[in-house]
Image 1 (cartoon, helix red, strand yellow):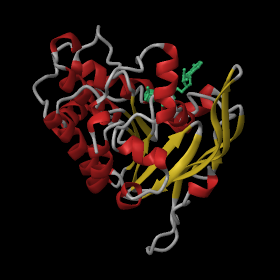
Image 2 (cartoon, protein in one colour):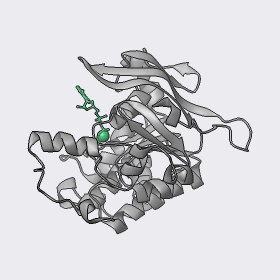
Image 3 (spheres, protein in one colour):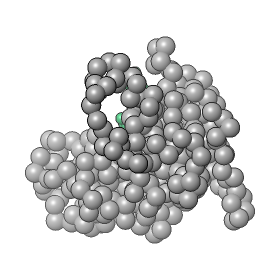
Image 4 (cartoon, helix red, strand yellow):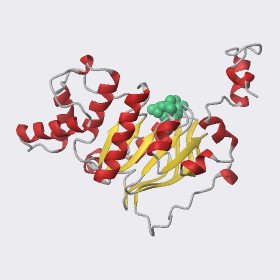
Length: 287
Ligand SMILES: Nc1ncnc2c1ncn2[C@@H]1O[C@H](COP(=O)(O)OP(=O)(O)OP(=O)(O)O)[C@@H](O)[C@H]1O
Ligand SMILES: [Mg+2]
């Protein structure tokens, strides 16, 4: 597959690039299942890098390695110049304060109010902050996501989009340098999705945050991504800006960005009886 990988030149015209996160020859297996296959990747400071790829291709597993929530089977992970994949949980505490992480599941604590959810990471990392100072942070972060006034709500009383925005407010509570977003727009309507896109852009613009966004949503990928990377079968098969991805020669990339099912996948589904040979799909009517 390597002939397709155009290895977009990472320098650009703006001189040397500062790398915040780097994985080198990262391989991850779960038992005999190979999920990441010798992946090397450097995430540039102040940029938004988008990771796309089919469900189950290893996107979440990859970004969990960035904060050592997963450990490599082989290979190395660096935060700036520090190797982190072998640090103890205790030593990682400090590294992780530089990161905000928006989990795929949203994962608010149901038994805590919105305000307490946002205070949670502050309490974890800074035991000496006063209640008043925390309340101010909560107010500012909620205002950022358009939810000031919702401090005393509980997650159960919020819509899906509001919960995502509270989770984002919590992810930025410690003013992180790097924010990892795992599927931030999944399950949201187009307008709510676009609000999240705007927030990603705003954080990059105002605070010079480095962002990594995992998404299935190509509209969002093109909008927020300075650089888009596609994972497939545990490897990077495309790496470039929006235009390079749109015109990428790899057929798997084209199928993915246009939402088509590959012939291989169809063959597997037909063999398994999930799609009968006689069933038509919308694409069968395309010219
Ligand atoms: N803790 C784990 N133990 C065993 N297998 C795992 C574990 N975590 C992930 N996997 C497997 O690794 C593969 C990649 O999972 P991952 O969650 O990274 O996919 P993904 O690309 O994020 O998919 P999606 O788009 O559906 O979120 C899957 O086959 C999954 O079953
Ligand atoms: Mg995932």
